[in-house]
Image 1 (spheres, rainbow, N blue to C red):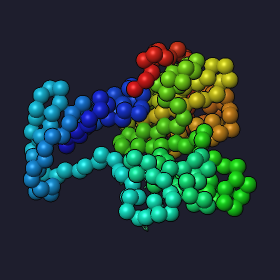
Image 2 (image 1 turned 90 degrees about the vertical axis):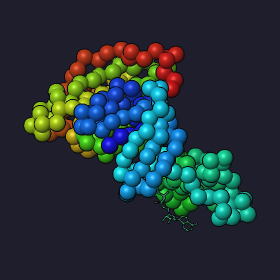
Image 3 (image 1 turned 45 degrees about the horizontal axis):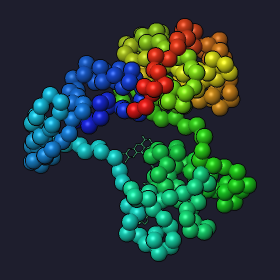
Image 4 (image 1 turned 30 degrees about the vertical axis):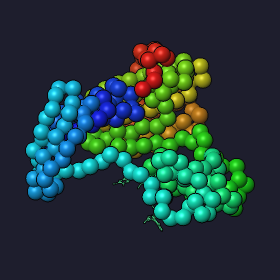
Length: 274
Ligand SMILES: Cc1cc2nc3c(=O)[nH]c(=O)nc-3n(C[C@H](O)[C@H](O)[C@H](O)COP(=O)(O)OP(=O)(O)OC[C@H]3O[C@@H](n4cnc5c(N)ncnc54)[C@H](O)[C@@H]3O)c2cc1C
């Protein structure tokens, strides 16, 4: 299998160390990666034989394969359904323009989830529904701004993440500390014989709030929910450091992560842009 990716990393929105760890695991598992690479031509028929021509910093390549999976993002199909006649504005990419209450430009008309340009995840779509519901039938206090939602990338091992990345925290000019341990520090990872990956947290040293969390390890999506609850409850990171978590669970790794020495961020504010 070969993954062809135009960006410099597989997950360009993640911190570079996280994406590089994923790339190393993929390569170990026999997946070839072509980064900073552009597909210039495809010939053949997927399911039979395909020839994919690729231009990368290393030169021109032709990949011969049996199947082709294209995953270059999705666009909303909003153009031909008469939204303009209803006075509902769409942006240049086809997303319905909404405010932070998910109201469109037409009175009493709401849009939500993928079509409204919300992050394309089922749990965000559900929360968009709650916002519209609250605004139409409730007190109208709910907004899309500043909500906290996780995402899980269902690779093996999983990537779970919530809140700010280290890069985003630095881009915002925040003073942060970073805790990091390898997945091999977690006893359960060793019993599962899957010790690749890492756990990482971004912490506000003043308030001791957890600002962000990333985990590349087995059950990372589940463990992220534990950190999410701490963030929602505004618990200091020391609660996750000192709370008694069952041994040997992957969640126990939070004890190890938050006991690790906190380091200053290596990302300068001026280098934090993408
Ligand atoms: C392959 C894939 C895997 C995914 N995996 C995950 C995942 O693991 N976790 C996760 O959180 N999210 C995942 N997502 C994203 C998630 O599915 C979407 O973000 C979510 O479904 C968005 O909800 P929605 O209501 O906006 O759109 P949809 O769920 O797509 O619903 C839109 C509905 O509108 C209907 N429709 C479209 N046009 C018209 C029309 N003109 N008239 C009437 N009806 C119409 C469609 O048939 C559809 O039923 C995945 C998406 C894809 C494509």
